[in-house]
Length: 280
Ligand code: C2E
Ligand code: MG
Ligand code: MG
Ligand code: MG
Image (tube, rainbow, N blue to C red):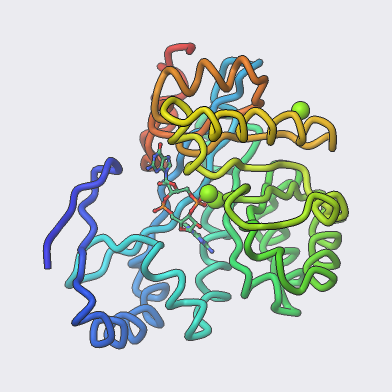
C-alpha cells in the first residue's frame, strides 16, 4: 500500500488488487456508520462563467475521512455505497449538507447562482427520490432554482423511459439537470434530444487531449456546437491549461471547471477564492 498525493491536497490511500476484497468488507461496514459518525465531508469545486468572467457556482464533491485509512476518494466508496444500498442515505446527506452550506455562504455575503450535486444511477431508480429531494429542499428552505443535479451519461443509457420520467419530475420542481462525463458513453443523439436536461458536462478525457490530439479538440468543438443547437449549456470538466481555456473560450463554452480554475476546496476557502480570483 502506498499513499498518493493528488492535487486536492489530500493523500488518498491506495490499495493493491490483492487486499481489495478484505478492504471492501471493512469499508462497507464502516461506511454504514460514516454518516452518523460525521466522517463524510464535502469539498467544493468552483465553476467559472466565461461571459460573466466570475465564479458563479460550485460542484459539491464528497470525501470520507476514514479513522484508519485517512481521506478516501468517492471513486472508491460511491460504487460500494451503490452496491450495498448505502447510496440513498449518503446521497441525502450530501444534498442536505450542500444546501445548508449554500445558505451559509449567502449569510456570509457570498452569493452564488448555483450549487451542483451528483446523483448516482441507483438513486435515480429509487421511487422515494422525488419525495426525499422535496423534503430536503423544504427543510433547508432552499430555492430549487439554485440547485443542479448531475447524472452521468452512463446512467441514462439504460432504463431510458424510467430515467426520463424521473428527470421530468426533478425538472418540474425547478431544479437544473446536467449530464456528467458526457462523450465517453455511446448514446445516440436522437435520444439525448428527448431527455429533459439543461447542461452537458464534457468529460475531462476530451479536454485533457485537446492540445495533443486534433480529433479530441474537434470532438469538444462539435459537442459545444451540438449543445447550442439543442439549446443546452456546456461545462468543460478537467480544464488544466491556459491552452484549453483559450480554445474553449473560442468555441463559446459557457463554463469551465478544473484545476486551471481551482481544485475542489473547503467551504471556508471559497469566499476568499471567489473575491480574489484573477479574471482569465
Ligand atoms: P465528477 O462528478 O465527474 O467530478 C469531477 C471529478 O474530477 C472530481 O473528482 C474532481 O476532483 C476531478 N477534477 C476536477 N478538476 C480536475 C482537473 O482539472 N483534472 C483532473 N485530473 N481531475 C479533476 P472526485 O472528487 O474524486 O470525484 C470523482 C467522482 O465521484 C465524481 O466525478 C462523481 O462521479 C463521484 N462523486 C463525487 N461526489 C459524489 C457524490 O456526492 N455523490 C455521487 N453519487 N457521486 C459523487
Ligand atoms: Mg459531477
Ligand atoms: Mg464528470
Ligand atoms: Mg449555449
